[in-house]
Length: 246
Ligand code: CAA
Ligand code: NAI
Image 1 (cartoon, helix red, strand yellow):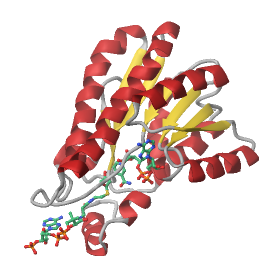
Image 2 (image 1 turned 30 degrees about the vertical axis):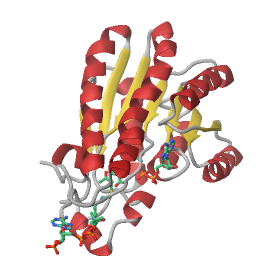
Image 3 (image 1 turned 180 degrees about the vertical axis):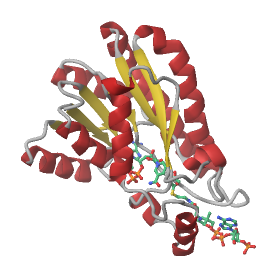
Image 4 (image 1 turned 90 degrees about the vertical axis):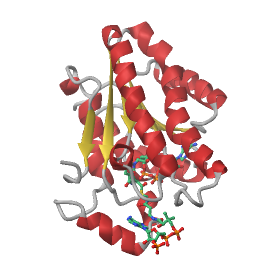
């Protein structure tokens, strides 16, 4: 087991990539705090994982709301005794061409995808500093590296995540905390299910491996960056995109 006795918080764990990661982390021996806005899905999915004998608990949070995140960090520490790993995975899209994108849709995406990563990291930091160790993994995107038509808000937030990752890697490395990011390509989840059919075809055509990714493809990368195997990896952005970016 690669995460035996570790305690991990995974945001956005009620669906998609975060859900796959919650199951994978628990199978690798971690106790997993599944933090998500979506309580209906979160409670149901957490119960299903518990019935498989896995150690998980659901925590309802809004990553854009600092009070909610501070309470969650304290509750996770109380429930599991420590916090070793934070996966900043929660995210949303509100796609629109620049000419039509509303300021509200710009702000909503920045609040969740960029400020949410800041809030969650700052909330768990005192616990990691106290124990002198930790692994923080942020979720960027192919859109944040290369840009993507219709995603001004999302690309800005995901590029910002890369900047924060590198800054925190420099600030926290000497404190025993590694900070890295994963930049997924196009992955089959509820997020991509909203994309128009013809655009999905274009996305697939961009991938040398010839298929969209699976949530498990990203969960695998999270496990590596959360495990001891990546102890000398810091400040990197791991592209898990089937080779879109070369
Ligand atoms: N490349 C070039 N041009 C494009 C384009 C593309 N990928 N997509 C659309 N256009 C062009 C259209 O051909 C059209 O051109 P004309 O005006 O000359 O006809 C123009 O842009 C407007 O396009 P739409 O008619 O589609 O405009 P719309 O306002 O109805 O919809 C949209 C705009 C909401 C952005 C819609 O096109 C859309 O949803 N696109 C998909 C955006 C996308 O890729 N999202 C990724 C979601 S998955 C994710 O975010 C995860 C991740 O990290 C990658
Ligand atoms: P998803 O839509 O399947 O799951 C996202 C989860 O985040 C949902 O459970 C949702 O309830 C939760 N969430 C949304 N807003 C929240 C908030 N304010 N507070 C707490 N939880 C919230 O999406 P998916 O595809 O699993 O995405 C996971 C991460 O991967 C996101 O950060 C996304 O931007 C990123 N990503 C996804 C790609 C894809 O193609 N699916 C590609 C690149 C990056």
